[in-house]
Amino acid sequence: MKQILLKSVYDAFEYVMDHYYPFGLEELAQRNDTYAVISIQDTHTEGFGFRFAESQSCRDVLTLYFDDIEQPVEGAVLFDEIMAEEILSFVKRNRNLDTLLVHCYGGESRSRAVAAFVSQMLGMDGKQYFETGNPNLHVYRTLREVYLKEKARNQSGQ
Image (cartoon, rainbow, N blue to C red):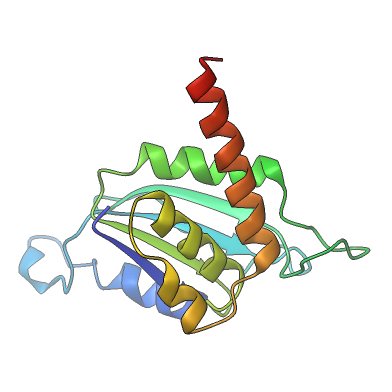
């Protein structure tokens, strides 16, 4: 991936629409990169009321439902290792695309943590995600732990 974009749900929708063009008028598209989307949605509202879908530009979509919490809260969904494994697999599967678009509601906590970790996983500098905002540390640490466990398993030949 050449770039990782961190967006709010509103800005993610705009980014996707920048790839749209009427039939036969490809030159009207504002963007022409290929991308994959990690869509992080809230559980208390059962999502945002829409889902991203694959298209000519959008090659893959991973939609996860968890809340912006860092410890268990009754009635809320805490990010877990299964979700982390899904993200790792998704990123590996799509690493040849131009862009990874990561969004949550505000683009400030959950998606920031995912973008920070994925950028580091891909050998990019993820410091800016910590310097310009507050990533959800539970999400970041869970991703890191699952990645390191997977890496250790692969190195030991299991």
